Image 1 (tube, rainbow, N blue to C red):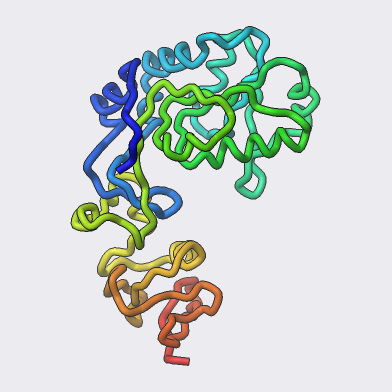
Image 2: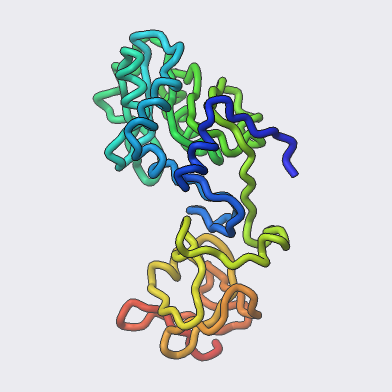
Length: 270
């Protein structure tokens, strides 16, 4: 068990549980394919205007006017970092993604080089990849981040190794595990397909398997399952089949081929 105590001085986590934006004691699969027992729907929580405004005010406290507020690119209508910039009378600069990596618009670079303090504002700190990418993009310009502000730090074990000062409104260790290291108690619970990415990651019996699903699956990990001639999943994760992503076949030598309708079928043994 992680030795990090939950800190919720503003009642953020309790409010999220009250409106079902935070669900505990479930078996959920996250975007990267890791497993956990807590689901955080920060977009649903911030969809409540009064909640979003209170979170923004708390995150804006103490930021000097005229600062630079950097926010990760987001498709949501409400942009937390932008509102924090408005409340603190600061300048807002969203990142943009290139090849799934956060960087900056070329037109913003001269403005980012002003000598004001730079704050990165985000809703959730998980594996810190977003912060690391933003720091790397700034480092290429000989710039640094003065402080990282976040609504919920769900991985203080990871953030403890980050040198950039972090201010989180709530902190709680919400562990995630690789599929091969999931605790037995969690394995006993069925994976939910209603929360997180379980419906994309876990093939269910009699579910047709699309090419995109298959490619993403074998590209990320070696996970066993097999299909019948009609592209129907007949077994899940615990089988003798183990995909080898760079060979296009299973470890027992069975060829994996693409059919004309862009689905994958299991061929004869090579």
